[in-house]
Image (cartoon, rainbow, N blue to C red; front, side, top):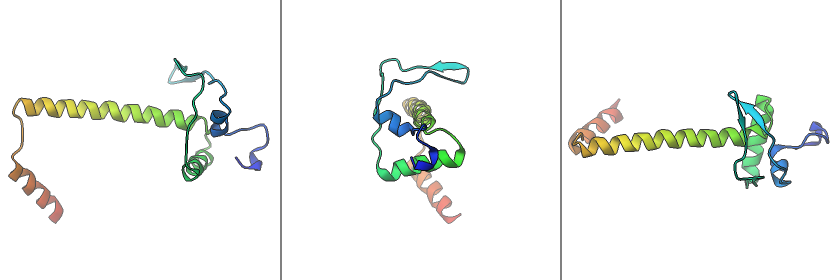
Length: 113
């Protein structure tokens, strides 16, 4: 972080690099704890780190919050994606498919719109 944040405040990325144990926080009414990891190192390109630090500044949030939120979003997305794939496979097994010609016609119609 820049010197403007003062020496007492370290970025979340610096905390990860220093391998400090995680701090228990409360989010959505429940405690967040690391079940198996005492600390985790996050490898970021300088460009990505700059973007995350900028996001923290613009949203007035701590840089230590952003990686947790990103992981939460990743899990939420993957759970949704797995449900969609499972549902689609089950529909295909039941014979609920669309003929290729219909799909092509639908795509062509969308491209014309």
